[in-house]
Image (tube, rainbow, N blue to C red; front, side, top):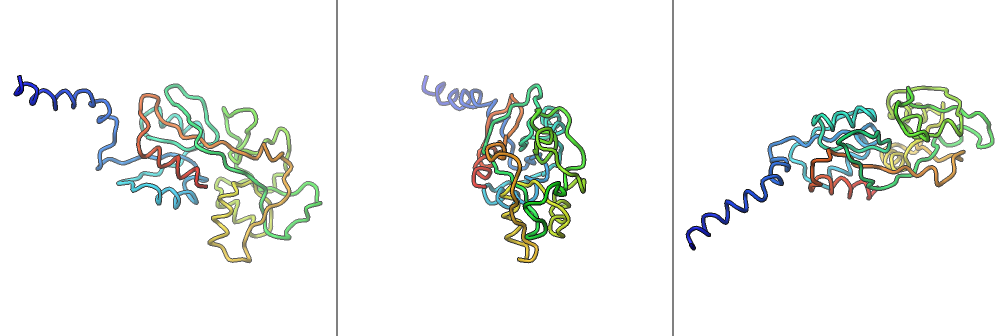
Length: 227
């Protein structure tokens, strides 16, 4: 009986933990994180300090494409503030970030009307009604003057540093940008038409419904909450 117990116990333990072990990435496997530019550029430095990824693959997606990639098992975890409902993909709010209108200091008078904005190139499809573009600005409530349309947030920041337009950006992105930029090119906050409460954007972590929350997801959530 003792010999049977000694032999069977580790086998039973392995069997009971089989699904957990299969769901956990091996040390040699890539961890595939998908998001868009807000969280694949300036946030990256914060993320890499929070967890020792063995092999991180960073993927760029638009909302909708991200959820499809997760569902198709081409991406392990996503970060988004524009969640697109998708079968077999779950979302968990990790934190809220504050958005604001930013531009070069004294480039525009706060009293000016019809201020020029640099905005994402195309509106998103399938998003909640309050969000039209990737920057999260509610254009249906507060129309803006579109002076420039760009595909990349970094391009929007560059246009702002030239004093040509304003942009609706996450405060944490501007703070991190200003830490590296010279004083001449620092961006400052301008008055914003949207109410303060509406400028709070929920940030979600998404993954396949069948997968358990592992240490990587907890580390990503912790890094997001530190912003």
